[in-house]
Length: 442
Image (cartoon, rainbow, N blue to C red; front, side, top):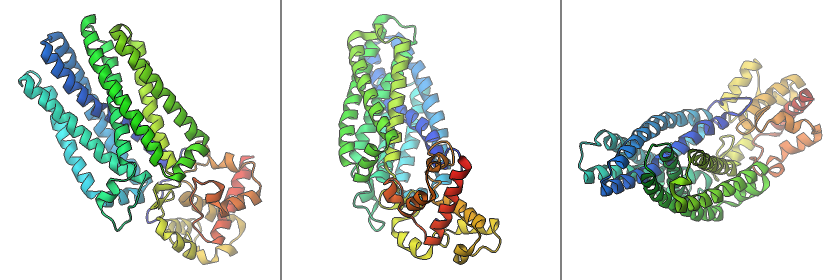
């Protein structure tokens, strides 16, 4: 807890991460899958010698470059901004653990940028074989970038046998690495096929040309859905016990899981029908709803991955409040405030002359002020006051005795919560603050 918290009362600061990250993931997966589809579609179009198909694909490439590179780059920077503010301990740990991985990903991203611009800008200047080769360079570089990022994000859920003394490769090749690569690769191909299908449905092309494109696209989509199913089953099998328990216990996560499965199956059926029926079936409305279904599948999948991690930010290494698991005994021994310098500074600004050692002797209003500060650093990483995961509605029907019992046994009250990290006087201050929250909410 060496950093101050960014406190957002109504949604919690960490909820701002998915607000930026999920749109980025959607576009990034479209970019990865779209690279493979574009390279293959252009290769096939050159093989037919059909100028109308090539003109359509050129328009697609222009849209593709603008969406994936411009929007993708901006939201990628936004992710670093939000995680640095909301989860500085976790961000620092990921940077230090995966220095080689981040460096490799940035190299892959530079290759990806250069190849994407060259693929579009040199459309009429390169011979067909070289033009297609540039498309494949982009596709492979984008996929390598996906693999590198997936290894790092998978580590947060399944750290496996890694310890701070073990190296990069132990962390990177963690238990959920391969299934998550299959999931993201399959999702990328499927989403790209759905997005390009929508684009094709809006084009003024002859029916025979649309039939060709839809047939080619559908094969990639069905391959993607196969990878998704294989990766999804494997992913559920390697999930840690606490993550599986979260899925079964938390109603929101269970709803998200069922919605994800239902949407995935619906898209598989729709793609199979579309592959057989051709462009007559893929109208703009049906194509739009298929893209929307793909977006829902990715969004629910990301929500599940993030929610299942609790009470950890990095499994068995960093807890939700940003405290390393190895430091928990020191927090119990020395106190939460003593181990959290920015909280100490906050309380001393609110209560001049504040001394953590005399906390139990403070009057009730001042203890509640201390409890509010502890709430911000210990609890606000998951709980808002109102709104998403709001604490006021939660404690509203609770008696003071129930609040006290819950703070004493946090991880038993809810397995998704970390253990209590402070001393007894601090726990009583937090209890007093939560009791007052319940009374104000009545």
